[in-house]
Length: 420
Image (cartoon, rainbow, N blue to C red; front, top):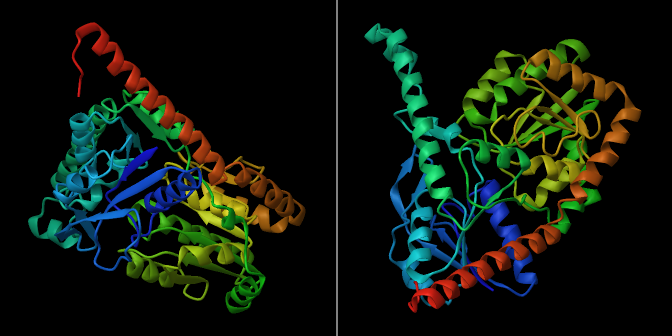
């Protein structure tokens, strides 16, 4: 098969969607398929075979995130140079519109992976974001403004949900990365064919460099415990909750730990200040972004993986940590509950600092429990090997293509007209 994967973000952008696309493309190519990735330019990317770059706009969201120019004519120009069997698009907006247009024009089925709860990211848009408190004070209308913002956010969420429902139901098939996400889509009016297809783990995610692991442990682990968390440092990742939890942990257990916060983002400075206010400046290590191929060694060097995000659709970092035999301490939320079995390979709690901290303390104080959870975490991660996911995706691709051909043949037999 010749597959066109279309995305609004890809390498060198760091995130779950680029990782998911790359892993699936790698495994599908191993199965003998031709996979072309249509992705935006960043100005810093390396040229790769079968990666077709289209232009980005000069303006950025919040000055950080590029806006892809999904209507760049180079997309259709390059698309027509290959006789594609299927389009697999990874966003319902921007590049999603182009995917639907090309699918209709060239009679190619379109599959969507619904990676993201988009309504949880409205705060990146200036209209829905919080305004400075000083501005409210000057206007002396804070209550009215806050109410207006809540109303606007509610309307925005409804508009996003309606837009995405319309887009989804025009697709030949939709992949949800987890059962939680499938349930969410069904509850919000999805009638298109819907399948659960998680992001897989490459074989190397289960490997590590013992020398590098020892170096990391020696560098950071001079306390009794070494924990880590991996995420963008943004509001939806709920890092403030994690910091409050570690303050409680320190109050109970003392100055006996380090937490490696791996990742970067617009809230890094605020989070560093918050850690200092909580007396955690020596305990919380802001590591910044680390190349993905090195992450597995950081996971391996740690005793547990800490997570507080409530906006995940799958939580691929949880599985990566579990592949390194790390038990998980997380807030219960969609995506998390699909891979964390409470009390078996980690703990999930409600979003209450005391409950979350209590389970972390329970873990570190029971070595037998820790070892059991390590084994169970690894076994769960094994189920998500990417070669198995690719075989499942291949089957769905073949079914969609077969159904499209059957539909065209049926219409031709009944009308004598080919439909394109």
